[in-house]
Length: 161
Ligand SMILES: Nc1ncnc2c1ncn2[C@@H]1O[C@H](COP(=O)(O)OP(=O)(O)O)[C@@H](O)[C@H]1O
Ligand SMILES: [Mg+2]
Image (cartoon, rainbow, N blue to C red; front, side, top):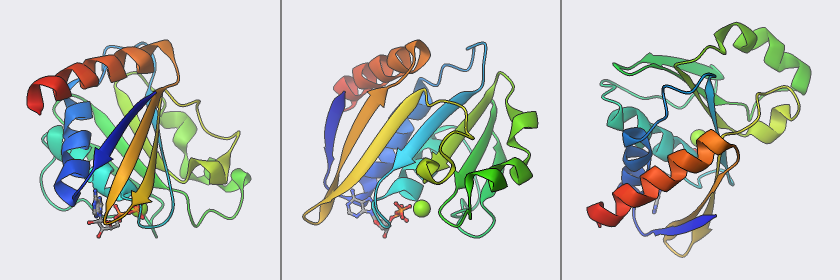
């Protein structure tokens, strides 16, 4: 587990950017990141930083109402989900996620606990919490691919900061 203080918004964005630099796109399966934490904890901000780091331009909207926003980056496809408004685990089937789970696809999922059991298992689990005016991020590699990803990202931060 890696813990990191995010004192301001830019820190949350650059954490996303650091993760973007080492996404293990060559993995034989789709990649899944769980983004957890209270409303306002910075989950969408981190997803936005990751998408920007992948070179995605234009507006990155919170998928609060659409549940899912899709992006094409040069490296691969990204699906950003916010399941806060999901009524029950069964509804996740209506998103058609199952047909999207190919190698080279990255899922960023806010509120994964709303669809527990209906989602692919996390490779990376990120929890954000409020700390004064800032945030704290706790990151955990939850699969071998995720552990390698996190180790590579942590190495990148060392040179960045
Ligand atoms: N490290 C940080 N310090 C202070 N404010 C932050 C930080 N990271 C994000 N924020 C701010 O918190 C607010 C909510 O962020 P958002 O990403 O929408 O949260 P969530 O998706 O978890 O509900 C935004 O105004 C954002 O700019
Ligand atoms: Mg959000």
